[in-house]
Image 1 (tube, rainbow, N blue to C red):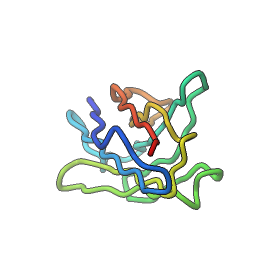
Image 2 (cartoon, helix red, strand yellow; image 1 turned 180 degrees about the vertical axis):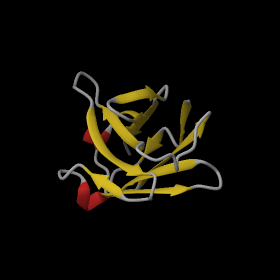
Image 3 (cartoon, rainbow, N blue to C red; image 1 turned 120 degrees about the horizontal axis):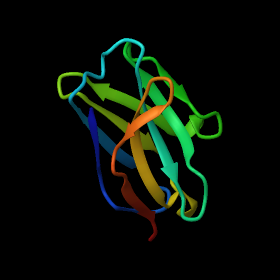
Image 4 (cartoon, rainbow, N blue to C red; image 1 turned 90 degrees about the horizontal axis):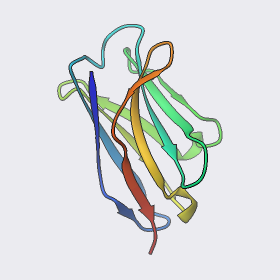
Length: 116
């Protein structure tokens, strides 16, 4: 399984960040597997943001739940992250990952900078 993130590298404060993860070598509708988003700000630990499972049920980090939405396009084998009202502290490398008894594999990550 391989995952690849895509989306803009620069987002302005208060705007909505939108990223897409394209999965190859496996289906996002596989049972007992979830597909998640994780971000790592510079100098900090990774932070789990949320996930979507095979049935389309979503799970969110409570601290981000009010601003986060994860959806999927099964025809393209993709899932997306939307994070609204971003602030400069949202600058981070954003990763998508497959979850099944741990997060593996991860995508290569995409740098997102929040700045005006």
